[in-house]
Length: 161
Image (cartoon, rainbow, N blue to C red; front, side):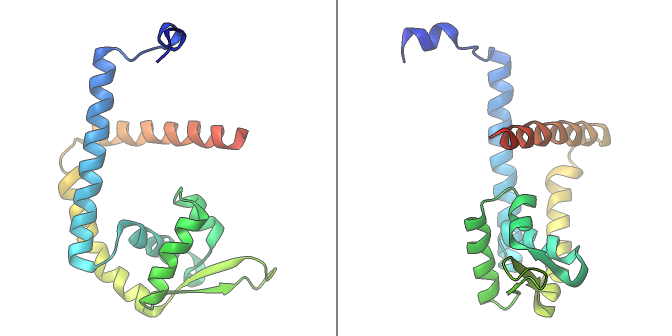
């Protein structure tokens, strides 16, 4: 590390560093636990589950692949890979969009909807046990507000490119 980099770096204070590391560890452990609970009971990854949830909330259980990628903050190639796994299990299929024929829709099958209906209570129980019931309503509201702000900041930055 050069002296110039060290001289002008606005380092985190010890307290900020501690909070940052707690966030990193807590986030990693929470996601690992949620993923483990979901996968052991349903054989769905969190990404697969989230795709099924988003589709279930749409008319005709259909969404453009590009919208899925944007809503889940994942690259198009990652979404394509995950959708391919779901297709292999008969939970979704892909079809060209009827409007322009260029875009591709992801469509949830009846089997996909049935799998989601069985998985949702398991996932919700895990989220409750590991987050919702562990913190107060006030802390949850603060957490939601903080992440809403962070999403906005990061989204604004990505649109500046």
